[in-house]
Image (cartoon, rainbow, N blue to C red; front, side):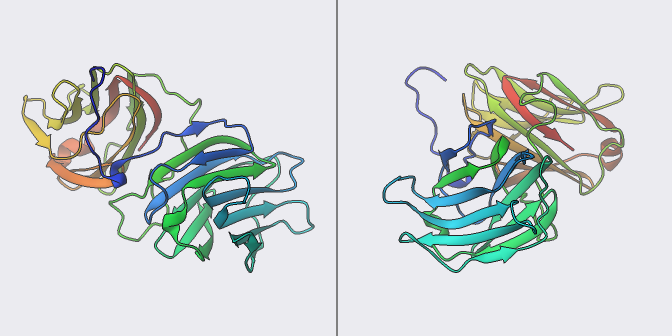
Length: 314
C-alpha cells in the first residue's frame, strides 16, 4: 500500500483485533468495535501457586474516576476453603446481586484456556474446553468497549475472535484454539502435516498478521506428490482473493479485501464432501469444488507469504 493510501471501508463484523502476548497485569485495553453477539474473547495463561483471586472485567469505558460500569465481572477466588467464581454487574458505582459458581475448574500452578462467548442476552464461559457458566447481562452489550484484567494471574495471550460460521449450534466454542503452540510466532513458510488427510466436517484454522510491506500470501493443500488440488491466494497488487487450481484456473472471491499491512486476519476452511467452504474473520464467503478422493489424499497444509503467523490448527 502506497504512502497516504486509505484502507477500503470494511464492515465492523469483518474486523478482528490482533492478539496480545504476555501483557503486564493489571492490563486494560480497548475492544475494537466493542462487543456484539458472536464475539469471542480468549484468555490463555497460568494461575500462580500463591494466587488469591483475579478478575476479568468487560467494562463500559476506561475512566478511573468515576469508575466505569462493568457489564460482566468474572472473579475466580482461590483463598477460601472451596474455590469458586463470582460474577456480577457494576452499575452507577454499585454492585448488583452477585452469582456464585462452585467447583472451579482452575487450579493454582496450572495453565488454563478461558473462552468468553457473547450472545444477544448472555455470555457463556468455558474453561479448558468445558462449559462452566452462563451469565445474563444487566447492561446493554453494545455499551461494552473495554477489557480489564486484574489480580493474581499470569497472562500468556488474549485473543479477540468471531465464532465459527460453519457450526449450526451443535458446538458452543468451536474455534477457540490457543494462539501459543510453542512460541508467539511460527516460522513462515510453514508446513503443517495432515496425517489422515481431510474428511467432512474438519475445520482448518489459520490466524496471522500481514507484514508492513506485503508481497503475497498463499495457503495451499498438497498431496504426497506435492500437488495442490486447490490453493487460496491473496494478491496485494490488485487486491483480490482467489481459489487457484493446479491447472491455472482462477476463481475470484467476492469479499472485502482484508489483507493490509499490520491488519490481523483469521482464515477458516471447512472440508465437506466434494469441496471446501471459506470464511474470513468469522464471515462465510463461499466454496470451491474439490474431488472427495483428492481431499482424502491431502497430507500437507503449506502457508507462505508476507505474514506473521500465530496459529495453525486442523
